[in-house]
Image 1 (cartoon, rainbow, N blue to C red):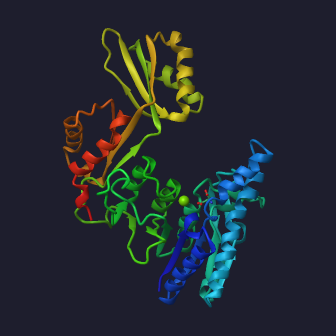
Image 2 (image 1 turned 180 degrees about the vertical axis):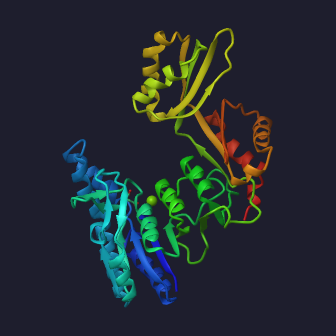
Image 3 (image 1 turned 135 degrees about the vertical axis):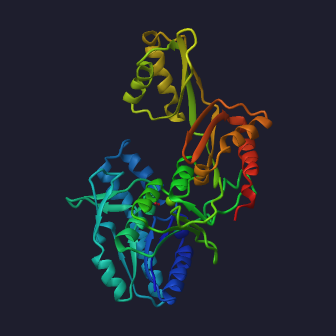
Length: 408
Ligand code: ASP
Ligand code: MG
């Protein structure tokens, strides 16, 4: 007998029929003798509908009231799923975040979980109930309803699994796992049987969004065994997100190719090559709360240098404006921008123990005539910025060069 936390996303509970399917799957696990805690999202589209409704009344909805409102989406699905389970002859009981007591801080719309009372759930499980908990929501120390940020039900699932010391946290979604890259770009992309937490964080933050990034961090921190599976397929192992030691003995060097179309590049040309220049350029950008991702500074020639960095496309105009404002003060020759770029990354813990990954990547891109504009690396990732029109080609040739179609 195992204790399993299962989380079902919005599309998996998007209609009464789908809710019945979820109940059937839960019943199957229950029949195998497992104890089950189910975490559900709101029905697909519901959270967006509620937010839009709030905005019809208040252009910038009051955060406390918005949380009171959007948390209702999940309150509906926990009751419906419990009813569906009862209709199948199972004992089931639903809890809102406040009823479990998922205690959070008071940062409305982006609250963080502080503690979870697991006694009630434990007692219900021992009495044979399926426990159904509303994802995405909690309660602060003063009893205010809070929510955990968009996609927060994943984090609820992982947090409950951690609190209950569950054997596994299963995240059911509309894809059947984590892929070597986006199958819409490379149809030969393969589902990974396992991936490490670190790789998953790189893949997710680089645009292969399957799980809320916070839930992966949380699972890594509390050592929760996390599995991503499809709620629309009967069988299938999904992808296990795990620790390096526990995954395959022989690591593939590269686990996947991630990419991101959301960034834009800014270059400050011909600034004096002197101490403090990076701070003078990026200080005002940081003060405006703009996050900077990749940064490169050239080697100075004749006392001046070029300085480039990337920001989210949403912040592009603003960042350009700020730098044009300080251009005179910086003594810069020019401030240039390019929002037609894309970032492509190869990710894999195996590169820690292998040399030549970067040169393989650069050779592959060169053979296709793809110019690299910027490069950044971490221990398990190499990212390049290229012209966005070559993104799909780059993903495909890299996928092939690192033999990811053979990955199983
Ligand atoms: N219903 C919330 C959202 O749409 C939380 C979730 O689905 O994870 O963001
Ligand atoms: Mg989600």
